[in-house]
Length: 123
Image (cartoon, rainbow, N blue to C red):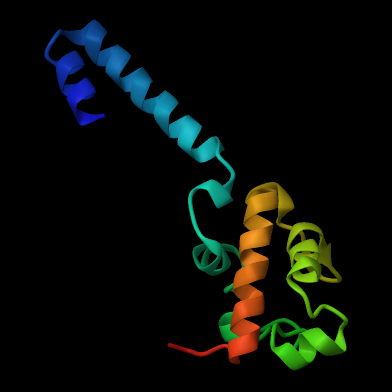
């Protein structure tokens, strides 16, 4: 990308304008991609879920954690069930399907399930 921009910037203001527009288009394409195309499940969890579910807990409703025992008690003890909640929400939690995309919800669910199995280690 830098090589392209350098080539255009050395050709005057019109070429500089083209380079700027090219940069804008590239950024628009990158940000238009579903979040899953840009990050893995752990990163997506950190970006969209960890604000309320720090280390698998829940700062809004204590009983609605992502700990294995809570997931089992709520009938959500599978990556598929967790993905459905991530996509559509449940109760006070809104869904993130539009932001994460189907692949992103699957990645978040796999991460949450793995962490629940491990007891949500803090390291």
